Image (cartoon, rainbow, N blue to C red; front, side):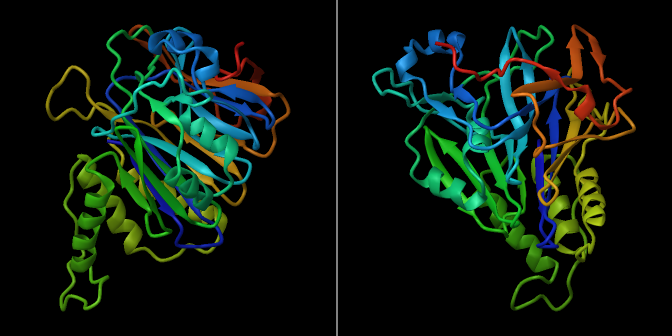
Amino acid sequence: MCLRVLNNLNEQYPVTGRNMNWFRPINVSLYRFAQGLEKQGLTHRQMRTFDLSQSAVFKWRSNYASVVAMMGDDEQGYAAVDGMNDQGLMVNALYDTPATYATAKPRLENSNISVLCWPQYILDCFADAKSVAEYARHNTLVILDDLVPEGGNERELVPAHIHLAVSDKAGNSTIIEISKGILTVYESPKYQVVTNEPDYETQLSILKHWQYLWGQTQPSIETPIYTVLGGYTPTQSFDNAAFYLTLSDMAQHPEDVLAQTRAFMQKGAIPYQFNPKKSDHATCTRWTNMADHHSKTYYFINPLNMMPVWLDAIKTGQPSAKIQLITVKGSTVDNTPELHGNLQRLLVDCQDPFRVNG
């Protein structure tokens, strides 16, 4: 039940927000990567799972620096779930229940890549949403399934069914869905709100219905209804975000656009311990991130902490550095409440989880 909102009402200062909703606490770190790093699309563990040789694994060199939220740990592996590069390109990986992937192709050289590091490839190699859409329409990569690495010794991991939402400094948007390894692409600045289900074509149909009721279509309804249903399901989250975004005026200044976007994300967030079904694992918003495409600043907001933290994508320094934001150890969760503001000074050198291993 994740939500992504591209606030491009002010075309000069677009900001993208994303709510990460999940049913268990998640290990997450912020990584910052320099450009020029050699990476590969599968770890040795994943290669063994798919019975692939090193030559069949897709490899690339990063053209751009990036800041990335990584889920997982050394035991389970890592997943690039959100990030922004130094060109202001933002990639959000949202859960997508119907997603299905390709079959590994051991004889196809330099082609197989895990869906867990596919978002990192996009960040490393593309500068804007249009070029991502062009790549996706002619994709030749074999994108393989995997399990979501939550970290914290969790054993009952779920399949990594995702789709990608990409946005850029021009306020453009690209949505990519996967079915049997084939990519379906939607590209337009109008594709502002995305959630994890239903399929995006149906989401757009739902939006058209609401825009008619809100008086935003031609011919327009004689008596617009300025309301929307409440609730926490993906569709209701989509409706709520679209309602406030569609009927809001443009904020004039960059700091006001950030504040406006944060309010949009709060309207679509699920409160901590909200549990209407009294289930053992209740879904809530684990974090919200926002990308200021103009300043190239990536913000991370843990709802259990009072203060946001951030990193600049254009200041790299070390080839690969990180800071742990949420640590899960069994039933114990450390949300690092002492962290606040710019995390640049707290980064520590580390290995790139997607580095090439010969």
